[in-house]
Length: 383
Ligand code: GLN
Image 1: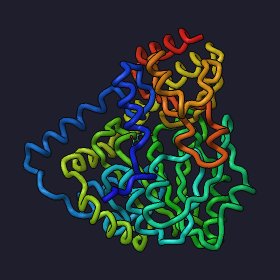
Image 2: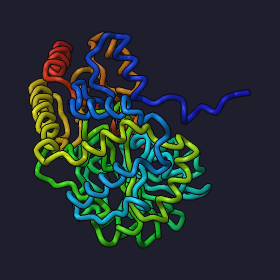
Image 3: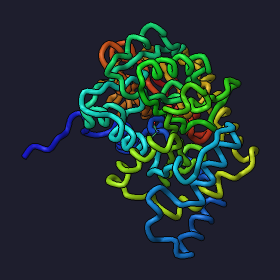
Image 4: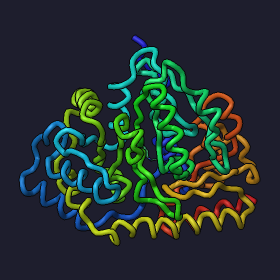
């Protein structure tokens, strides 16, 4: 009785957090903030628990949260979403991705995505019986190669998985790039699943454009987001999907067999959180921008080449000047010797891109100033 393992064995994020703990390293790996989210949300969740909201929430989510999500989509993007049929609350974005892929991808179907990609796509697509077709976004500019994108589509394409702002490159897709993707999806009659969990963590001037705001994409786009990133509450695992009722019904039917429903008290708190004013939304991005700039400047001073993340928690850095030519095999020894952990970028790619990204490491800058300073000090000591 051999259990099914590869490619499902264990996520790189858990492995790298365990490595950081074991080696007492500065953990710039897994993307979670080391500061508390807003206290009023903690109070609201406690209030909900003490107030007895401790039984199953409705299958598609608490009505007040679904309404708050619809209000959010209208307020920030002018999108009209029906809270009854066009919103589904999920246990974080990861469950949303799993449920959507399991719902939409049939054996033999192809799924187009960019690489590097978020790590849960390959196992989910494989489990659904599909094949992943990847399009490289190459360091350090991560431009979309139109030809490569067009070639990735075929008459078997069923789904495009997009992530903007993009983890791990920090890229914000432009309207023109989104148009190109939408046009190809339309031509091949494919669904678009767009993960926009970093929508409020944009650090430069390139605006975040939701795929669903493109008229040519709206009727085939499922948009995901999550409270974890917007409110610095990654452990609460409250995410959501909005999109056409027909697609959402299919995803809901999958979600019900995975978790049935998402934790209620946290939904109650997030429903209130989404209504906070613009200034409160900007606080996290302002803090992150300072941490990004601290890390970028520090790495540049050490002669380490990086990309320029316009958003998210992450920067990609070429650590070959520090002797880390192959991060996939070298990260454990690097942590043991130097006490810093990042995520090898090669764990987010396939095929030829594994070699092309070998010396690249993803560092998370959603950490306190002194933690980033200590990480930089230890990296500097390697030279
Ligand atoms: N999104 C975060 C990251 O990329 C955490 C993901 C996870 O741990 N599953 O690091």
